[in-house]
Length: 160
Image 1 (tube, rainbow, N blue to C red):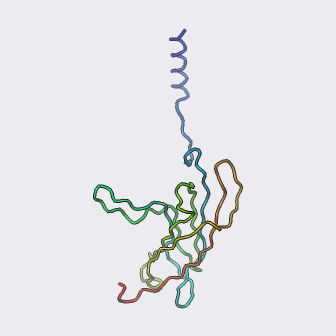
Image 2: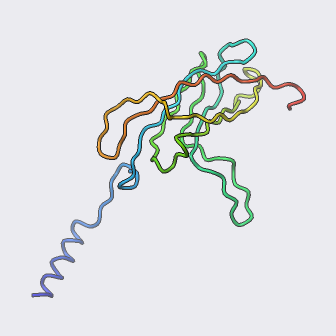
Image 3: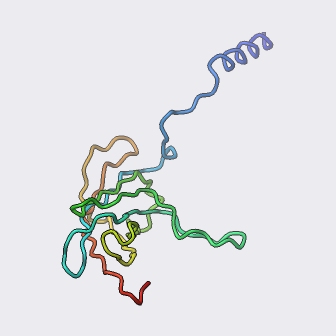
């Protein structure tokens, strides 16, 4: 009887196998939400919109391991500002990845001379008072949105 049961269980596992979800999921039991930063990138001097600026954020912190200097960050969510300067960056992040409800936002001029040269900058965004929307479901806590106007300082010749 035991051999028959073992054989039956082995056959069922062979037929049905072990499956995995098709869509990536956050670890079970971890509260998570969609964190969105949106707004406009403008020139600090003349307040004109700037296109071609990469806006991204990350939760990873650089860690020196085995004597290798890591890249400054691994972007989770990235967008490039449009002609009118608007951008929107959004990513689902678990609560454990945030530090005091804050995320660093990296702003980089990636288009070269096309729209002028601007200094790269890092802005820490606080999601404590973010606008909350979306429906809570299980561990999912909806969307948190922060409006952020980014004022970029033009590069001077001595900055190059």
